[in-house]
Length: 252
Ligand code: 13P
View 1 (tube, rainbow, N blue to C red):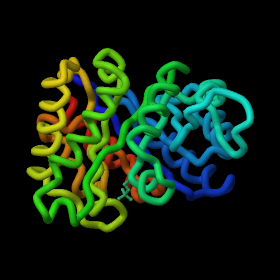
View 2: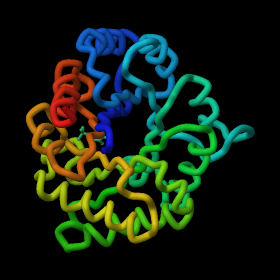
View 3: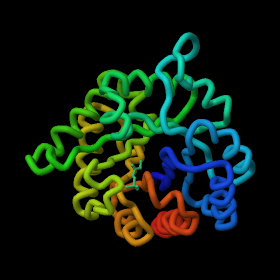
């Protein structure tokens, strides 16, 4: 049985004062326990958030990581630094990183490898654009993203990943994938992993893209949806807590 996982991706939002308010809301709701919960603040706030979460049932993650471990890489943050700051998780290959910052499948694979070597648990993001879905290419695109990672990392390392299916057209648009659309793609991803020889039954596959307190219960009830990667709603303590509760209810 895969334990449900809900991860908040704060993206480039927050300030020390705002984070304090959000965190105290989350801690009051005490959402962890039956499910795994993590939040991923921007780099400068990792230490603040990590300190606030000490002893709580919410773990810490980052939104990006360097593929290099140390040295002359101005502006980069290494996997060992994230581990040193208390991160358990790191998001890799988010569509915003792929489309706005030119991350290729090769870069994504190198970051995943480096993160695993530092003992972090990477969350690999995959997903198709609206144009790709409309041309009937969603499975081809997502299948290729998954296959390139398995090929680069090998089946044992690939089994250590969490995969997040985030259709680009659903991110920040309020246009959430239907439970059937999401389940079909999650089943497809698990099938692809299995066919490549990865122990896919144990791999958690999260859905991301306009997840809300309203859409979460039906999404999380799908057999291959193991939780969510939540953007906008993770910035509101009540909404994020409600989403976590929806996952816990399914897990009960
Ligand atoms: P939204 O939940 O704001 O659509 O963002 C999803 C996302 O990109 C999480 O990584």
